[in-house]
Length: 105
Image 1 (cartoon, rainbow, N blue to C red):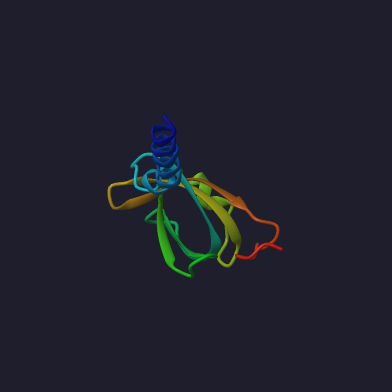
Image 2 (cartoon, helix red, strand yellow):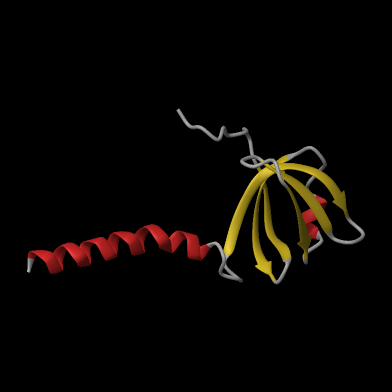
């Protein structure tokens, strides 16, 4: 009985640790990214953000052009988005008041 309990506990622990990794790949699930807006193309309804954590450039499509009306280049923002195929589609853009460090104290 002790052996069965140990195996079940181990499997449960592994499942808990692995579940967030699978969630990142699920299309349609809402994600967030923070960083600075580097370019805005209002004609094609896109903008590019440089991520705080990894320094990578992310290009987002915007369906609601009103989202782009309130942002400016160089602004530090938090973007809510969904993956649709190979595209990242922004659903919300919120200004960040302070830049957070990758390492919290």
